[in-house]
Length: 237
Image (cartoon, rainbow, N blue to C red; front, top):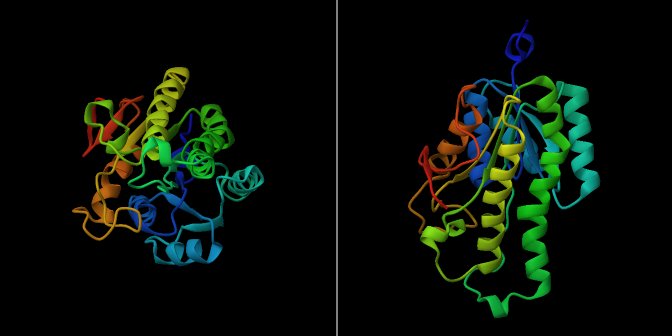
């Protein structure tokens, strides 16, 4: 029986890939030979990243994970043009409450955080993972954070922290549901990275932050599932 890789290159979709860690992830997956769907809210940003990816197989797509219609259109494009998605990297995220306390996070900030960091991820999973299960192969990697960990909790950014802890649990739940299907589900803490979100003082480059994500996105069939990773190692949360 032919494997997917014998029929076509595996297809990876990276959300929030127009800049920062997402851009680095897209580049690293393209270097590994995957056809990489570069998804960003602005098509022009996705096109710029796709044109810089090695291998010539990157595909730019406009995607807003807070818009269900946008998610469904993106999934349809991937099915029709590429035969589906084998690797989903949920990178899109927001941090609008940096330095705030629980009492200073108002409803608009809370809802905006959860809309991208949790609901958007859930939508992408619903849209793309059933196809992975049907084909018997898939990798799902979601960007978490050190702020998600009960073992390393810090004050500040409570909405962001709660959203990323929710992602850890979603990862564990989905991994448990999909055991034995060929789909591995993990999340990655990229560390403190020099991006628009991380700021100029962060010690890690986007490529360093992307490394564990690319590692999890290309795990062998007997790889781990349902865990949070930092620097390619599982960590407690």
